[in-house]
Length: 327
Image (cartoon, rainbow, N blue to C red):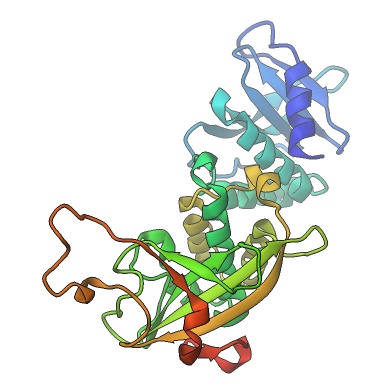
C-alpha cells in the first residue's frame, strides 16, 4: 500500500462521532487499520500483544502510543496507535505510515514494535522538512554530491562526516589533505560543461590541503537508472551497519529539503555524460578574493561567474574514480 492510497482511505473515513472514539477501516495488510478521530486526525493502528511498549517518538506533531481499541466485529485488543496531529503534515504522515506498513505489517509482537520504532527513527529528520526548499537546481546539486560520495569517495562514516555541504561550509567535501567542490550541469550541447561559481570562496584554497573541482554533466533520459531517491537509498543501505553515520546522513539530506514524502517529484532519471575531477592550483581559471588586490569596487557586494571547463584541460586530474582517493 502506498502513501496516496492511504491518503485516499483517510479522506473517505468520517470523523469519529465523539472524543475518545475512532472511525476505522481495515487495511488489506493483516491486522492493520486506518482510522480518524473526532478532531479529524489520521491514525494508523497495528495490533500488538498486551504489554507491548510504545516505540519512542520525539517528533512534534506525531504521536505514538499503545492502547486498547475495539473495532467493529473484533474483541478489545491492544494496538500501536500512530497519529498525525498536524493537518498540514498528512502527506508526510501517509509516507511514514506506508513505510511502517511495509516494514512492520507482516511482523508480530516485539518485532512489530521494534520495526515501527526503526521507521519513526529514520523519518524524524524528514518530518518537518519544507520540501519546497529543494528546487530542481538544488536537487541536481544534491544528486551530484551523492554521486561523488558513492562513486568517488566511497560510503563510509568518515566520508559522511567529510560531506559538509549541508552545513554551509566553503567546500562540499572537506578532508584534512584535500577538499572537493562539486558542480553539476544538465545543459545540452557538445561544447562541454559550463558551471556557475556562485561566490569568490567556492574555488578559494582550503585552510589545509589541496582543492579539487568535480564536474558532473548529466542529461535527462527515461531509460537511465540514476535518480536522487535511489542515491539516497544506496547511501542509507550502505550505512546499515553504521546507525550513527546513517542518522547523520539522513539529517544532512533533510537539511537540504529532501524528504521521501516527495520521492516521486525527484525521481528524474539522469544519464551521466561525463564526470571529471580537476586540480585547482594557483593558475587555475578562477576568481577569488585575491583576484581583487584593492578589494571589490565600492557597491559590489557579491561576485558570481560562469566557468567553461573546455579551457581547463591542463588541470584535469582524473576521469576514473579508481584513480583517485580522498586519503
